[in-house]
Image 1: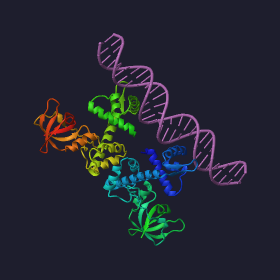
Image 2: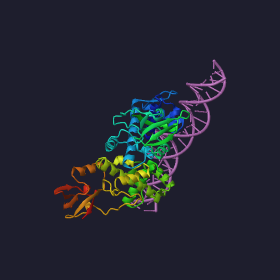
Image 3: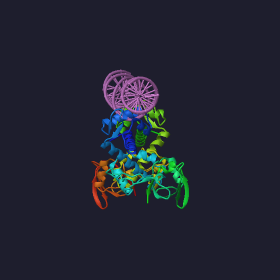
Image 4: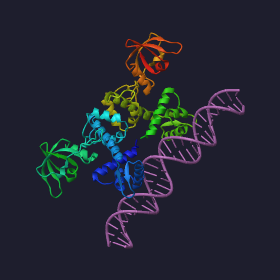
Length: 218
Length: 218
DNA sequence: TCAATTTTTTAGATAAGGCTAAATTATTTT
DNA sequence: AAAATAATTTAGCCTTATCTAAAAAATTGA
């Protein structure tokens, strides 16, 4: 079994690896983990001793097969608990992250799998992120950013890239939620802001918003 | 907030205090915590610095009001999660302890209270132990041990004192569960074993069994 | 009561995980 | 290609929670 700290590092490395499709630098990992580079070096050595990562001095770090499996297991638990909190306990999607960060470290294979069953094997968490199944398989999304759509195109909102409380509350305030159909009425060349149409209403959104919304085109 | 270790100590002190209605000795606490007396002394000093316990050298330890509240909160969470595991995820009553030991440390008042609501404010956990409400109030049991009943008396099984896997599995094997009506057919003076009647069948049980079953007389 | 025994505390170590400051290696710039 | 800058690692220290061994206090019992 892995310690809480080890699991958090593995998860962070996994996220950086998939986001940038490259080895992860010490500094990037320190930034992600909100800690110091020297602490990262220490931990990365320990993970390397346990063969959870491949690490060579000054050359960053990559997850091994075992490390990747461990990271995916943590992510699976995190996302299942998020579904539980929203679907069963009535949490809002901006309230679940912190609690799921704790719940994701509970060690019990039976618990994870029974929870999965209880939730009827959800495919996505409340932010639209895919939930790995018990074998670690992700349903890979074919989704694009709203900012990639052109004037006249239409799509369905299927996920958020940024899942900070602030962004999620902005979306709530503007009635944007997963499943909503969005049409690009106008796209401003100067600042990339967009006028969109949703539920028959028009709404102007900045580039910072449209680059954080995942869309499935129809 | 308290560390995992602090919470476990507070819980252990609470259990020993209520079981023996007296201050808790270093050795007793070491035994309960499966650790060494010297480790207990260290921790007890830390708890005392935080005013969670009252401690004087060589005189054992007692929970302060704050310490008692913290302990009850952990116990509340433990027992609510046990109900969740059994009622919602289909765990058996001998499988829940280990997982609940982890879940009891999750910090989120909202989570605890929403879980309580989701479970419809259960009064007792799967072993018959009372669940404190959000204010920390226990429904105190008026229950006796099966071993206290005399020949001819009848009662309903309402809880177990020992909730080890072994004992619980023994009970399952013999179809003894909470809510069952039990009649004392015969009581053996020599070894205190009993012949009991349950569901129309007779069963002989040892003193070790009857001193670990809580009964409500009718 | 005073010696023997038991209980509890102190002292000194250890391991995980983190920090700061200094040293070292890589990468850019000129 | 040397100098400047950035990234990374090392060294040494801190905290929490644990341990063993030894010392001290409390209790028991002859």
